[in-house]
Image 1 (cartoon, helix red, strand yellow):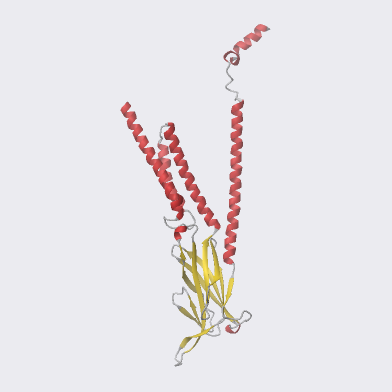
Image 2 (tube, rainbow, N blue to C red):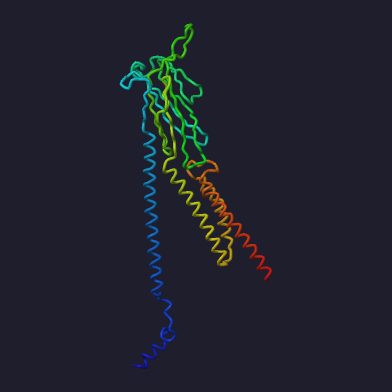
Length: 332
């Protein structure tokens, strides 16, 4: 019996050599693998949570921006607020073009009370004088439904501050009566203002548009100061893409540094990856919403430095590869 036990112990490699069975995973390795899996799960859940929060915040921001712009604000000129005899001018902001420095506004005229016929047309000819109209002023013929009037307003702002740029413009509308000239051969614009109300609204999803009355109104005109700034969702997405560029450049620097310090041989795939990254950064930058040409604050804050870092990594890796190749050849 003892001989059998001795034979079994002599044939057991763990008893003779003191080594563990290679097919059995040590408990320390199992715990390390389990820790990595738990850490990976936490990262996945954290990424999903951040994604959900970002999506909800983007949705809320866009809704707030749209509701702010679609809110109609009415400004009353020389007319009595309680009177029903007036002409309402609806100013709808259609487009904000910061690159061109202009703002598209459409005016629609709606007569009320004694100024309107039953079919909604004007009872008498009215002259419309508005800022941004190419013709200066226009006569709205009596007996006809007034056509929409397109305005192009000048924007005042700094485009280089993207995505934190904001713009200001001014809108002035004045309605006057058109009367017969003194000689009776034609008509002329009188200085008598028409009771007017101006309703301002916007049709912009990515811009937060505001309006406020100007400091002074003269000659029966209504003057309104308009403001426009990019919505929160647009700003957040632009900053997110900036962080993506910084992360890509940091990864390129870390990989190049690790390869050079550890003495690992440089592979051709690394040069391909760095070269592709050099061309990918401008593509990522150009996908920012409403981004202007190169030279904004974000370019100086991150894009230029990311481009320089990736280019420096590519040049450093290439020089190291060439020097190593020549050194190996000379040693041989």
